[in-house]
Image 1 (cartoon, rainbow, N blue to C red):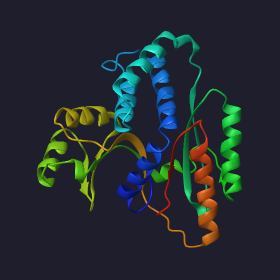
Image 2: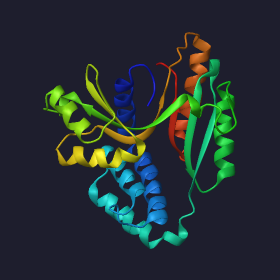
Image 3: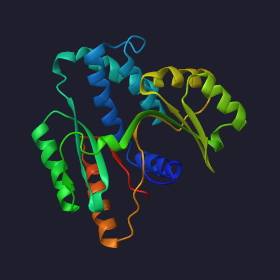
Length: 242
């Protein structure tokens, strides 16, 4: 998630993901494998797995595909060797970028991420160098076209479910939660029949930065494109106001 019109950007991101479902499903499959290895195959007793399943459903992954992934992971627990790693750095004009990756080869991933930053005239920094500019939140996006509820009723429903904040834009609603309360809120919304276009724990910028220089824009886009194309990269967060 990123940019001034975060709702439009999330839609754009989702459409882009829909056009590349193979990669998205592979990414989520890796997350399922790691979650099962760490906490077992029962989402009722494994918060991380429940969160990944929510993400899978938000990305329209079929239930049978999710179940197969869980069963396969449960049978291959000893063979799962992926690990999470996070990189932080700066793009052109000091744009803050956080990269979450899930990899079986940290040397390969580090080299690829560093290359993406360098080719975009940016640089990888030390852990913590930009993450303080972001807030970790549970974020649920609701498409107005898919939701029949009145805005006030929807707001009361999600706040009663434990959400921290509710906001409305032209075409979407955004629900923010504490990361630890995300799954409970998401489950209550699902039980209430509220359609969710996106549901995940993410990093939200505290402030956004505008770029006007064409060269800087091209360089930043080069970095973001390279990171999005990397199979090890799970998510990219930045504070660029698109």
